[in-house]
Length: 71
Image (cartoon, one colour):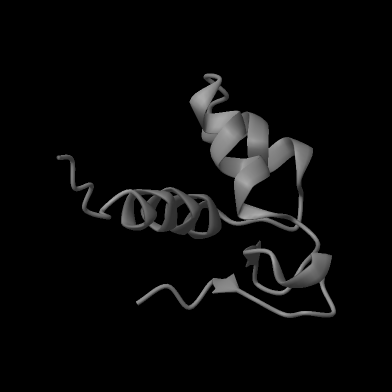
């Protein structure tokens, strides 16, 4: 499903990264959250592809699907 999102203890301590590179998903999602367009992110990180950014967003959305139980 999310083959571009990788976890490797030897890369950034196992944090979610893009394709094993030292680009954390959190950095990409944060840039999107602050209004950066895909083109700006791609210019800042030339090794990224549009599909990498899209999957970072999909991964963040998947993480928010947890259930919260209140009393």
